[in-house]
Image (cartoon, rainbow, N blue to C red):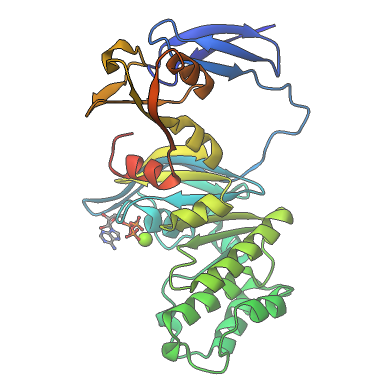
Length: 338
Ligand SMILES: Nc1ncnc2c1ncn2[C@@H]1O[C@H](COP(=O)(O)OP(=O)(O)OP(=O)(O)O)[C@@H](O)[C@H]1O
Ligand SMILES: [Mg+2]
C-alpha cells in the first residue's frame, strides 16, 4: 500500500490517496466535488528512460531582446518530440543554440551526454539536422551539397538511396534554382542520409505538399521503430497529433507545457452543453458551470459517466459533449491562459 498526494485537476486541491501499484480508485475532490479516477502507477521492471537531449536553464538573449529564457526539458531516446509555439516564441533560437549556431547567454544543454559548449563538432557529426538557410549553398548542385555534408559526416550514407526515392530532387541542378519544397526535401535527405540516432529539425514540413508530408510522416514512424529520436518544431497541429509522442510548448521564450499528446488531451477534458426542461439553476454542476442562453455549460476532466448520471435526474432536451481538439488546446496555451 502506498500513499500519494494527488492534486485535483480542476481546483488543484491536494489530497492524500492510498492504494496499490496499478490500482484504479474513484475519487471525489472534497473541495470542488469533481468526480474522477486515479490510477496508481505500475511497479516498473523496465529500465529508466534515457534522455538523449537534455536542456537546462538554457537562455539566449540577442542583446536586450529575449530569444529564450530558462528553458529546461529533456527528450527521451526513441521518441518523436514536437516543439510548438506561436511566431517569435523561441523555437528557432532553441534549435540553433542546440546545434551550436548560437552561443547561449546562460544555461547548458547535452546531446547524447555531450555538453554542446565543448563538443559541437562531434555533435554535428553524429546528429542529423537541416543546416540553417539552404540559400547559403545556392552555388552548389544538390549532389554537391549532399557530397559536402556526407564528407562532414565522415560515415557511410546507408539511407541515401531510399531517401532519394521518397524525396525526389533534381540533383544536378543548382540549389539557387530549387523551389522552396525542393530545398526542404534536400535538407531532409541530408539530415537522415547517414542514419543518425538523433535528428533535430526546424519546421521540416514547411513547404512540402500534403502527399510529401504523409510520406515524411511514414518515414519518421519507420525511424522511430528503429529506436531513433526526432526533435522538431512545427506549426502544423495535425502532424503533431499524428506523429508526436510528446510535445513542448514555448511561449515568449519560456516553456509553458511539456506533456504526452494523449495526456494533454485528457487534461483538457470535455465540454458539456445541456438543455434541461427544469430551470437550469436547479442542476448543481462543477464549479466552472455557467448558464448561457438557458443552456448549461461546464468543462469536466473527470469521468463523464458521473455527470451523465447526475443529469439523468432531469429531463434532458438536448445534450452535446464536445471533446477539445488539439487545436483548442494549443490556442489555450498560445493565448496565455495556461
Ligand atoms: N538575430 C536576431 N536578432 C534579434 N532578435 C532575434 C534574432 N532572432 C530571433 N530574434 C528574436 O527572438 C525571439 C524568438 O525568435 P525565434 O526565431 O526563435 O522564434 P520562433 O519560435 O522560431 O518563431 P517562428 O514560429 O516565427 O519561426 C523573437 O522575439 C525574435 O524577434
Ligand atoms: Mg522559427
